Length: 153
Image (cartoon, rainbow, N blue to C red; front, side):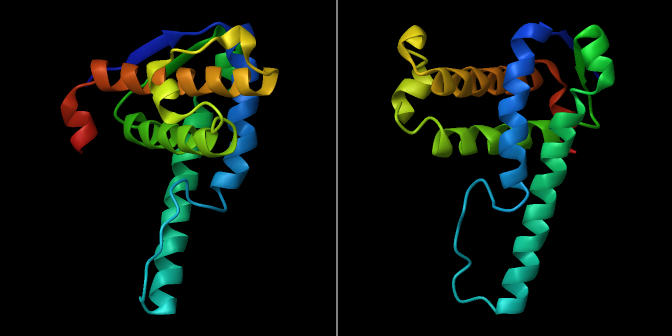
């Protein structure tokens, strides 16, 4: 089983963590990708939604746990079999929420191509966009470097 350790720049990452933490509260109350369960029994629907929200909240907590006191001491985060999958899902949830709440003005094509004039952006949009890219990089690191069997377990 592989373990990835990544050294990050605290002055660069700290403001991005503020963005993630602001969105984390909302992700504990609403799914990142809202959907309708149609004509399901209301009790079943409520139970299923509660379970999905709890799982999403657990994933976001796994992401935030990377940035603990140890991170602020040495700037290192680590991925392994215990956190890879939840962190991947949490990054997706936060990126979707960023897209919805902060980055809608940029458009999906621009977000995915990263072909944007960052200096011309409003400060809040720039910070959200940098967070979006940061989370995408975390996802890429996990996918590229961890054994695929970890992600399938």
